[in-house]
Length: 87
Image (cartoon, rainbow, N blue to C red; front, side):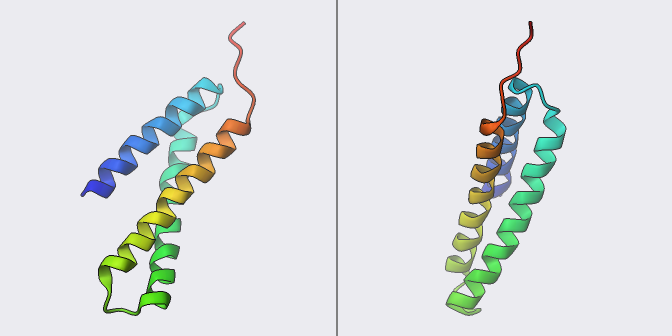
C-alpha cells in the first residue's frame, strides 16, 4: 500500500517537472508508471535469482530499489531537457 502512495507522489513530481519544461505532463507520468512497473519486475527477478524464493522481504526490497531507480532515471532525463520560456 505504501508503495502505491510513493508512486503517486513521485508521479506528481515528474508531472510538475515536465510542466516546467514545457512538456506534456501526462506523457511523462505514463513513462514514470511504466518504468516503475518494469524496473520493479526486473528487480523482483534479480531478487529471486540472488535470494531464492524463500526470502520474500529481501526480494521485495530489491524490487522496490529497482523501481525507485527508474524514477531517478526519468527525472535525470527531464532535468537534461531545456527549460520552457514563456516569453
